[in-house]
Length: 204
Ligand SMILES: [Fe+2]
Image (cartoon, rainbow, N blue to C red; front, side, top):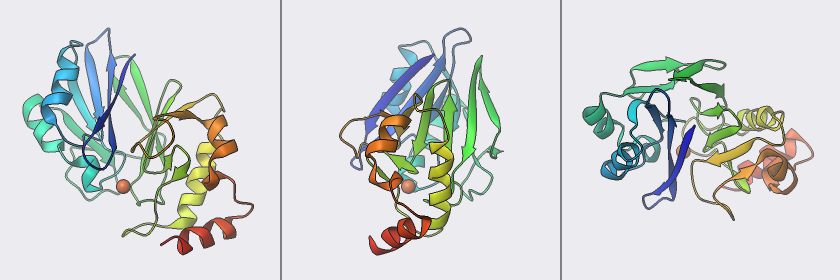
């Protein structure tokens, strides 16, 4: 698997390029700007971008969807609850095939109703659901602390050795592991759901 993490834009967004060497096909996740750079990263690796996948529809994660789609004919994929422009809808448990790569969709509402995480082999792209050392906010339209609590629990049930790659560079390092976050991420260390919800409501 070819896996590239790119820090793009003023909001510290991470855009990802995920490619399959054998077929030469790739997906771009959350293109946050700089179409030329994203296309160049694909070109130097001989990858054709077949899909654009958005972890959710907030503007900073879909910013150059159309710019990339126009130049590559890539199909835009989002969760079915997203109202933004897309070609294909996915739901929890679906698998997106990019050549021989299998990208599993995990629906993780809370930051927004359409938020998804993407699991590829041992790498989990967490969008704005889980950051290194923190979690996504729930005060934007469609945000819901109780849903986020359950979504985070879902992620915590994955193996400790799964690597996490967030949607923003907000932590002490650009990526982490489930086991490490379970120990050190404050958002994953509330004693009760009530405490988590109270904290999330109080933090905005
Ligand atoms: Fe967001």
